[in-house]
Length: 343
Image (cartoon, rainbow, N blue to C red; front, side):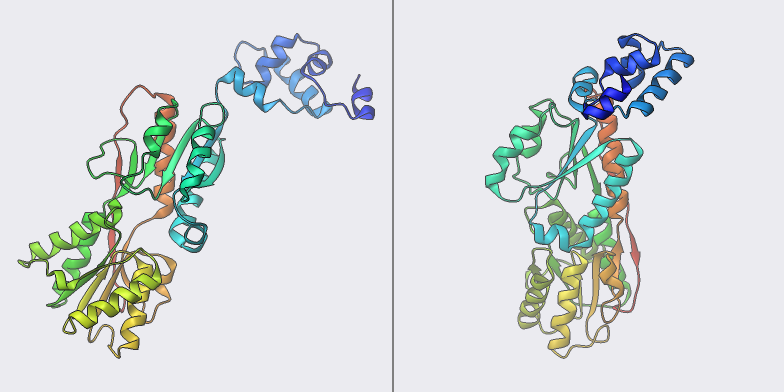
């Protein structure tokens, strides 16, 4: 039997495994699917037969039996340029991939910025294809989490889509981190602290701006709209925002940027304008991405760990998959300030 399957190129079957092991088909199936009530002798015989025949279980059939696919989808609602160009996304994916590997689950990566792709996502993200979904970089009007949950698929969001969200998310304490940045600039004696904020329709953008405002309030100051510009978290938007701030408020002496890429752009614009950092203008970023150590001067920034976020997203999703009827409170990761030469 073994010789015939090898010479004909036929794929070994479960029946062949059972026959070679000298057990029934049901016993062989229980061993392959991790079932209980199998003697150690039978288990060893089946495993030896699997190795000898080169048997590979049918993934679709196993999914039907176990009612799971062992696959988790990560959906990132950003362009390919940003996903593959910014270290934040690489760090999150690395953390997710490591944690899923440890849990013996497969990762499927889907990019979904373009609206025309959303219909295909709705059809794919069902229990027939995935056991759970991780979502990253959504804007606050995105209905994708609710549409996926309507299919009965557990969802965890990386970064909240709403600030009042209480469960099903993992986020960084953006308000705390931005407050640390502003407090540091105040302690350095800076009087005119500007900000390059992120997009207002993303919680990371709005909550970091809240932290900026709270940091000023703690120092007895108010937000001056002339000292506020917004970017899109990209480096060029940071440079453009810095130029606009210098034109509108040339006496500013510090700027808090909502991420490190925009801070790198701000440093570029300050150099072009002949401003010395930190002598004339101090600069603080947010994220502690690799670029923060290679800017000139090296960037003071709020540290967050994308890999930790990815791991925490997987942990929460696995908990939710194991007990979908229970509420699973969101997790907030703390931040810390890393001081370098830019302040």
